[in-house]
Length: 621
Image 1 (tube, rainbow, N blue to C red):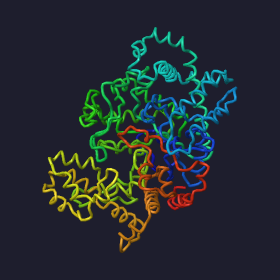
Image 2 (cartoon, one colour):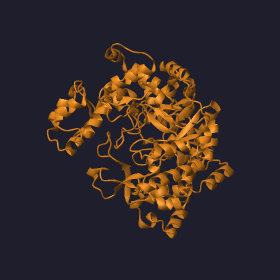
Image 3 (tube, helix red, strand yellow):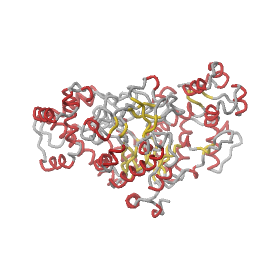
Image 4 (tube, rainbow, N blue to C red):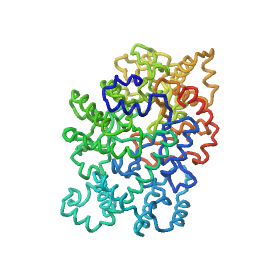
């Protein structure tokens, strides 16, 4: 369909696809905080992306997808940012500040010793230590290109002024949430704000200057990537933190602060997810022609060729939870906003068209979760790629005994194929502990919902407890049919259909994958069990990567973590810990994982030749 662009319903998207081209491509998803070079100070920095781009080229990847690069809030989540515009200051390179007039090499040396990149996880205190040095540079009157700096401020006054004032008040308020500020600042009383601005002009100006420096460093990376033939893909969160400059400032009317947003219950989160961000005031957004969304993209195109729309189903409707809902219920008692399903299609279509028309970047969509029926067709008509997750990409015939994996040829062309991403386990852990298992919390909740009291007894009858770890329950091999499952439970199909569906999704998944994998290769093994269990985890992950690379999807973009699973030996516990984020949790393990080696050593990995071979064989090079 992409080759026949006349089928697309939006004229702007046709031109964008002409620029990108319709050749198959591969790429990686990599958080900047996870990488580091010999020059990095405590965390990955913008300049480190040049080394990562060089590695991408060496293995045949022409897309580098980043997580959101926005100024993060208290939990360091890039998806709950303090601004939809401002960049994360921790990523700045201190020795590359334009106009600096002082020597800070001794300061940098101290920080590198205090915050070594050899640790397993990032210490985000580096952000505030860097800021102290940046203030020292700023207070020593750096030499500015006055015209460029003033132009930057003028062109970005639609977000920069509010953001800088917001940050300065936060500093003066001991970083308190803006909803706890003095009323005069909380409600933006003009006279008081003007007085604060006059008294804190230099502090406010510092944050504007800092964002200019970040702009210069990051936009230079886009230039480098284009010179090397690599497309940079950004990640544009659909939501923003409640404690953000956007919500506090002139865009406040865009939001509905009476609810939290989240996700309804699913197989991985039995109680759903409550994210804490506000929902939107749909009528106000529509009345203002979605100006807020357009301005997000206007600024983002300074840094990217493509972008991922996080939680694209949110453009149609959002799962919302009343702010007074008890914490223990999480997101169970939420509802969709808008409530009227008849409004969902119009809502999503108008917003997505506004996205397309607002920039020259190619939009792709994260269309996972509970997806309204109309979403796939609208995305296809608009030429917006959805996501095909290999493990979830199955033929789901209600009358079948087990759901089987789709072949590589059955992946949608207008899609980005993945095995894992930032919200999932790495593919090695997924294979060892998630394939063939169900979530233990979900099992208990299903039993409770159908009034089964002897849960522990049934758990031992249904699952191989010895080989069940990390909150996952592995089906016993002898539960070979739904009939056996029903007999053990003493229930009818209709009574336990949720558990039956979990069984059909997960029973014997490892076997099922290799049936599909080998059939696609026109290879058939007499003893498939012996074949599977004769492979080590590195070979299995390589097979999964090869399978997806062969798929019909135009893009294949996978987590960089999987490359390291193919290269290094990991213990089970290390596999479990080697992930970027666990959805629905807030802890210091999220958004902090580092790669096992620095960027200078990437070029020497043995797996590089295999990755290049996979891309060449599948015409993604």
